[in-house]
Image (cartoon, rainbow, N blue to C red):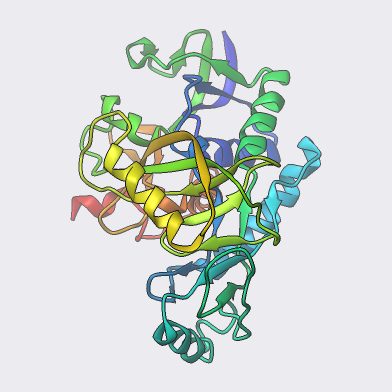
Length: 343
């Protein structure tokens, strides 16, 4: 029997960012991964401090972006790579009213750090009203992030590529491990978890395309009109993703594929080929806050879920919140505490 501090169950942002906190604090753990691509692993990886439909920010945006920058530097110390790609988002304006709204909001104290008031007109794409740059925006090298951290965990015998079997937990032991705490970071997989049967997580299905553009973009930006467009490599670009909060089948939705194709055609006036269509189910919560906490009858059973469309920022920031709660007894923010659903 091997004694460890933690078992982590999951293979998305919540699991990997919490694993980073344990690496940082030299805690012993194993991470159980079903070796399947989670919604996190097919996500765009956009780091965006704004809600670009309304030109507003969101709860703790500045603090989360600052913490993400710090965390990426910490991860670089053991993987040798920083996965934060400093390519700003450029919002393509629909009309003159949007331009003026952007300018007006860029003068407010809340939004001044994020809205660049100097507009640009970009070549190759259609943008008659110009584009606005989102300061402090970036994107994550999603594939590199998961691949390299998985490799690190595997090399240090911290990764078990096996689906977790809840029935094999016996007290504080599981398949040869004697653990102090177990943290379930399963996304929509929580619906199979018998310990957290009342978790109010809503599946938000998102589609995206991998496309080959006949005329490559001549600028290093992430473009945003209805959806995001950015380069993946020399040949392929990412375009997406959609938001569908209704329960849908676990298959590609042709209607969403057409929606994406039409959305790209709105501002990209050249031919393109769709190479792949992918989708994932984001775990979202009605109040748009993560879910963190433990069970009254299993004090060392914790959940870290509900990251939604901002999985990178929520996963990074609240992994520290959860760690401090478990190890040092710090109170959880009431906005994210699992207990808020008991009121």
